[in-house]
Amino acid sequence: MKVLILGNGVHTNKRILPALEKIKEIDEVTVGDRNVMEDIIINNKTRISNYDKVTSSGEEYDVGIIATPPYNHIESFEKINEKCNKILIEKPITNDLNWIFGSELKKYFKNRNVFESLMYFHHPLWNEVKNIVQSANIKKIITEFSVPHLPKGSHRYSKKHGGGSLNDQGMYPISLASELMMKTYEIKDIKVFSENNYEVDLSGEFEMILDSDIEVKGIWGLGKEYKNFVNLIDKEGKTYEIKFIFSKPDGTDTKIIIKNGELTEEINVGVYDQFEIMYMDAINNKKSKFNYSNYKNLIKRYEIYKKISDEINF
Image (cartoon, rainbow, N blue to C red; front, side, top):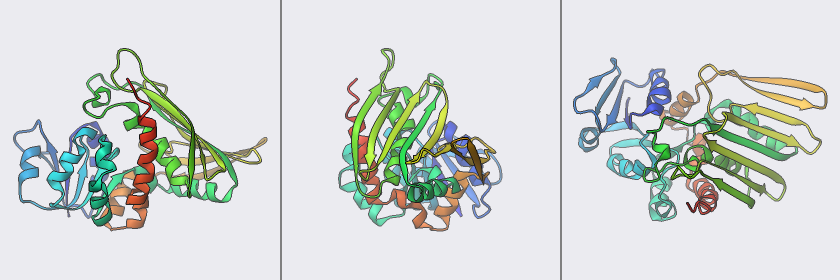
């Protein structure tokens, strides 16, 4: 089995390649990098090659992974659309909302094995969260994904390259709320913030009502204290605290802390590599595991995203 990755940044090297190395079904991994002129052999499974060379060759792949900056996602997708059996695109699919709401998204995501990569939906912890929301009479959800500042050269600080905290961190609270929605939502408040010496948004939050009953507050930020959690609160005040709901540092033993008055209970979920699970789900054609990425759910998610992005006027 052959895998092609377009993009050789920190995310590829920290998350994608280590996950693919664990999958015995994969025989060959090629990484397309615009800055590489001659092939670099990493090991007997992985090589780095020139981006233009691999995208213009006649070679075909079982799985394609697009991990370039958001502004380049569609260009990369169109270059490998016909040469990969399945394609996973890192979130957001693109920062071009005209493409999202035009005919192209429907064409590709309805009729092909093309998916937006949101790895946390493949972790067993997500099933636990869904089960709690569906069965525990949840009244309020509070979720946040915020990270400290990244190195100055990061594309996250470039408006041209699809940067900004909404695109990078904000997609996580948005996708969580969208996937927990059964039918309807009502946005009550949106706030987006930046600072004078930055050209992109650095943080934001929303408040919404899901299915006329569940209050959701989503928070995200770049250049803030690291936070990565979702708290679920039922109508009696019982709280389910889940840390590391989105990103999981290596070796994270995921768990759910249940607090009910003075009583505390802990549910251990375990240690998993959610990237490895996601790629295995793609390889094994488990389309039900990618329901969050079908056309209907994508449009639902990006409608919320658009309403928030419309507030970015700096």
